[in-house]
Image 1 (cartoon, rainbow, N blue to C red):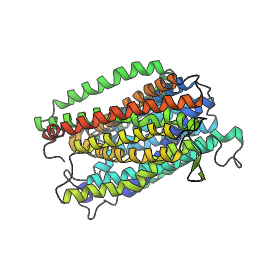
Image 2: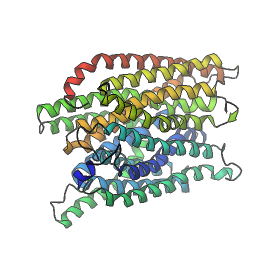
Image 3: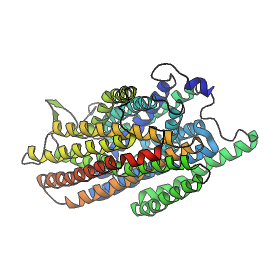
Image 4: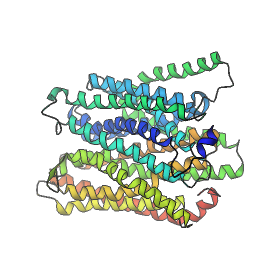
Length: 498
């Protein structure tokens, strides 16, 4: 049945599109919450900006760290389908808790969402990878289209939730004291839609994503599965403590990464030299992605504060919430260009001109550098009150988006191509674990920027923020050049995988 699915005609398998919509609504939930975190913590929980950045980094780091754990349980016990279902249920529960009373139950709701995302996110991506045969040149185009679905959800959730929460949208309909409740409730509703969509999709997936324990009796298999479900619930109060104290995140991050690497090295003893070379190449991509996401994810931290305090609220005469733009502009540009970029790679491939995955990563960093350079140039258009151009800021996100399209969907695709099938869930989890370290790094960077700008005038804050973005542009440029120089050497590790 799996072979029949993989022998599809045309550019995309038909199973891609329902998975596209399921992921779209799940990402609405995730990015809607992500866009609210720092502003909610500063305005409602009354944290200072430095601590809010650290808390943001800690929360997001745990989200992505748990994707590694979720991938591991999917590989070894639950299978991808049951992992998705359980993750969706936990995300719905977390969203409902936050909708009821986000101030009192903030860390409880966030903890449910973190664990739920861990079970959901890496495994739907792995299922998409399984729709393709090894070596299928259409895979990158499929992942780029899937990535557009991610960003359609991020666009809607990223703009709608923060704009309702801070009162810039629907304020005439939503009472002031219920704005954040309503904002979080959007996440609960769309997550229900996401889960129902996936349940309806399962009948079209054949044997893809089934339990790896089918050789056990039904009673033994259920006992192991229920143990995982109960264990994840028991973890919630522990996670609440870890998330609420950023210092605990330092300890967690010092342990989870090395532990993941040791586990990978342990698994590598079961594979051939050729397979292990491919795993080393995948690991190089994963490590570089940490730096990329550390810079990119300023979007939810320092750039949220920069947008709230230092950007005009007009875009070519149209009044917009600057933070809504910060949360959603990137997603809009991905929607507009992701499929075109994916088809561009296919077009180059048919002419034997497609750059290697390493070169694509290098280009991604060069675009990232260009975007942060544009953020830096915003200082030249600032008023005396410290407000600068929303249009220029949006242009910066356009440039960064092309960097993301060169790296993120390509990275996800590369990991599924380079990893042996037996540990694809683990490797996809490690891809998202790298994002956890990127988020952790983003929180530290954002906190440093906030600390430097503390007790300054709005104009002075703008000078500090833009100077820091200039440094990030320089570091991204150096990383891009390094990757391009390393490209021929990494290509030897990847072998026949392109």
